[in-house]
Image 1 (cartoon, one colour):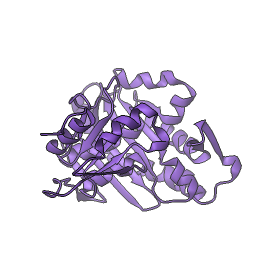
Image 2 (cartoon, helix red, strand yellow):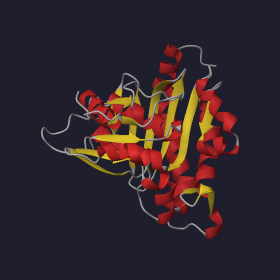
Image 3 (cartoon, one colour):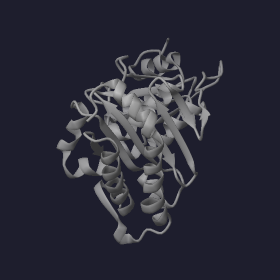
Length: 284
């Protein structure tokens, strides 16, 4: 059983490669064999036609739950599909035990369509503090990792988010209209203004990676589910970025956030986007 932060750091130093192997194996055995091979009986709806789950989601999460739990005795796993089956599972994020936060297939709609814009997300946290993350896009064979205080990397190369080019429109990926209600759409439309170039987001994990790489300037998301955000939040933070809710506070994976929130390449951009979402001028 992990007893303190130092022990978790030691665990990561010893076993991070094993976590990476688990993520890659889940994708290789349960996800990629079904990529562009899904039968109709392997795809189901959850809350509606845009909220899909496949056999790949379920089986990859099952593998990761079993494997990650064994790697770190005493840890718990909060996976998207487990929470769908039993919402009480989510409470582990607020507990005392180390918790693995898992999205087996982030971007299930893209996966079902046969597009390569999906990924597997794993993060390790304790007491609401993100400690490490893994973002793996198996169809692109890209792996991004981050360790708290240790930087962010893509395929072994250090990531630096940098800052937007002076005078250029901010490139902001926003919650997709298919997943937002009228009130959320109204708030997000505040980004449709001079100096901002908003667009609907794809898989959240890959949008965070784009910010960490400096390919996108910010995100603006209107939902809290930790499995979509945990890995990417740490990745961007360790690449030099920042995140803020609409009230100007950092986003908390434990919940209770004022929404929407932004994650951006630097603190100034985060303040600007947060200010716009709040209905102000977005001045840093």
